[in-house]
Each structure stands twice: as C-alpha cells, then as structure tokens.
Length: 284
Image (cartoon, rainbow, N blue to C red; front, side, top):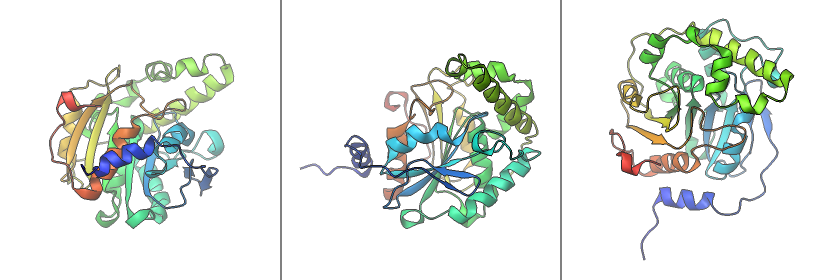
C-alpha cells in the first residue's frame, strides 16, 4: 500500500465535505478571519490587491479550511475602515501593517504562519516580511501577479489609471451595474495607487523565508516569463509557477490557487523545495 504524501493528504482534505465553519471575526482594526478554525492550523496572512478588501479572501478561507486559517488584511480607506486614513506613504503602510500583525504571528499549529499577496498586496506582503525581525518572519511568502521589487520600482505605479486597472483586473464587470459601488472601488484603487507611487526599492539582504512567485496564464499585466526576478530576494527555497487565471487569482467570487497553496504549506512541514523553477509541464 502506497503511503500518501503530506501534500496529497492536504489536497484530499480540501475535497472532503467541510465541517461547519465558524462565523467571521475581526481582530483589531487590521485583520479579518473569514473562516475561523478551532484546531489552530497554520495561519495564512493574505494581502489584498490595489483597491481590494479583506472580504476578497473569503472564498479562499473557506476552501482552505481546515488546512490553513486565513487572516486577511483590512486596508484603511474602504469598507469597514472607510473613516480610517491610509498611511501617507508606502514605508508608513509597511510599518503600520507589521505592527498590527506582530501580536498574531506564530499563533497557529506549532507557531507556523505564511504570507500570500497578489498584485499590490504581493509587494506589500514581501516588504512587511522584510520589515519584521528575522526570527519573526513567515516560513513562506507567496507573491502572485507582481513583478519583483526592483522591477516594480522601474515600472512606476503612478502611470497606472484606476479605471484601466479596474478593467485589467477583471473586476469592472462586477461593479458596472452599480454606479455607487463602482465609484467606491475606483476611490480605493486611487488611494492604493497613490501610496504605491511612493514605493522606492532599496538594495537589501534577501530574506530567509521560502518564496514562491505565481502568475496567471491570462494575466494582461505581467509577463509569465518575468517571475524569476524574485529569486534574488530570498536566501530560502524559491519556485515559480504559471497557474490558470488572470491578474487576480483569488477574488470575492473564486478562491484562487487553493490546491497549490495547500501543497506548498504541507511541503514546508516535511522538507523545503529546491531552489529551482517548476517545469512548465508540472505547473498547476
């Protein structure tokens, strides 16, 4: 009888009927736990895209239960934090998020936690990981739909238009029928783009966390061949994959790369993956 690998077991768990999921809860101003897990699995801190909110990760949180417990970032100047001002620049945002997360790091099973971010949230997730003390950094950082920090700085987010970004992310259809919702979405995007325009990449030592970069096969904003630039930003295991989807992989109406995230988290329990890209034929 063949022994099931940890990663395979995690995927199998995801496909079994889920137990009743507890009601969402808010942790302070900055964090939402969309699907609390009583058995305290690994915590996956999720960082939204530009204009996004924590609720975008509700489908992912439910799909990952009980393998991981999602803790989603609640950015200011939108949703339940519409009266909270956004920090004045990217560095101040990183500092504020790092301070808010610190009391909750290492609270899962065995103190394990990881970061997942997409687009603007990917850059923020990486920089927050870097801002934390070395002994408080996540074991794994997964960045989706984002160029590496050096390439991000060269591109310059100030050239992006909020309306165009709403279209390219595939969210325009969701808000088109509601003028008020569309304006709220555009306002949140403008706020995040203004902060992102202040980002400056500074040479630094790579982090020791494992790093995995993802790109959607149909992403209109990121070349799928450009993920290798992230390799220079970690001393730990590195990998990159192209997965089905567009610029945003996890949204309010789809959970995103559930099996891949479960597999990456499970693999970290047994052995670190090699510092190589995954061959295209093995991509999810």
